[in-house]
Image 1 (tube, rainbow, N blue to C red):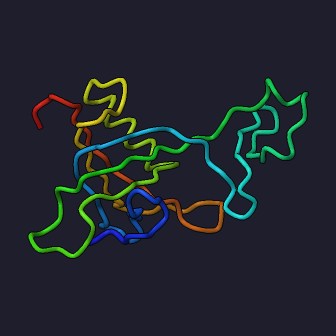
Image 2: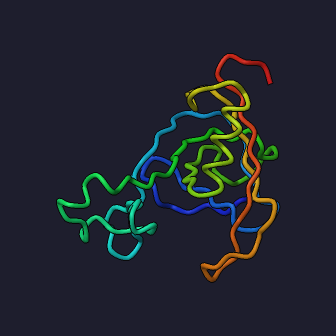
Length: 153
């Protein structure tokens, strides 16, 4: 299945794995961790270790400084290798990975013996199933493979 493309990054369109079976595969052009922001308020998100919940940056006080940690997402620019010849989809996309998708990619990199996700590495990510969640929507489950730069696939 084709992953949906959204225009969100001025550099490359974003790819979103929305339906079971959607996937993306290719070479990593750039990868970085950035702090998540709230969609509505654009405030940075933090995990409050005492309250055990997400809090927004605007609600923090000086007393919270040692009780919070930033919530991050992995942002990767990918040169796709999974498109059929003549596809009209963009061959270079940005993947915004958080939650289970981010964890699957990190686990795949560790399994490959890599300590970081580097330029020139190869990544494949697939949305394969869902499971019930107490947050209203089912939790998306992802599988990922990663091969570090210079390693053979």
